[in-house]
Amino acid sequence: MTMKIKRYLSLFVITVSFILLTSVYAEAAVKVMWGKTELKVGQIGKVTVQSNTTLWKIGPDQSLIKVRDLKKGEEYRVYRYTNDHNGLYGVGGGNFVKKDISIKYETPSKAKLKQLNGDKPDVVETPANPKPGDTLPVEPPITDKVEVISVD
Image 1: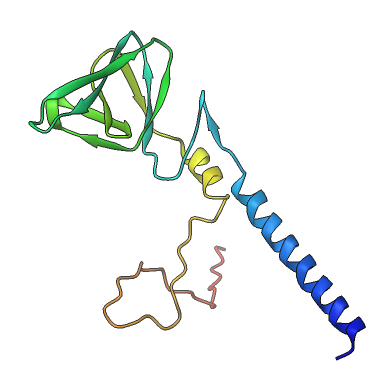
Image 2: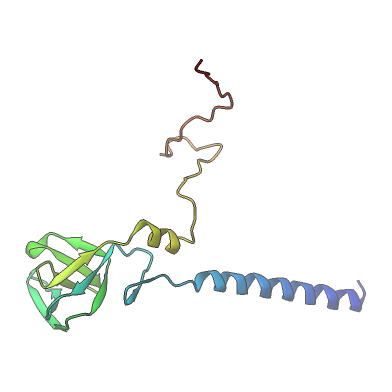
């Protein structure tokens, strides 16, 4: 190859790479706000502090250890729920908020979840050739024939 062709080819490869990388980062930068917090993948809900309460950690002996005080009006993402200690909402980092009247728990709407997933359709596509043993969703059969019934 001549030197000129190599230059053009390398410039083309760099340009295409740049375009692909920037489009990936632009897609990942979409934020879905839910109240005061950003909705994240893996989040099952949020708690809003209705009156001052406490943030807890679970100790080695399963007792609750105070981390700090939470102020009225603050919101925290919830990633898990456990029935221990009459209900605890996991807010990340091994921290929990007690389920009681001092907090309000909410789950995200279907519209917010759809935004978070990039507005992808709810339909799950089944591969054409599933492997033996795969558990796949059952989809209704596609029918091409439509029978028209007229009422006289």
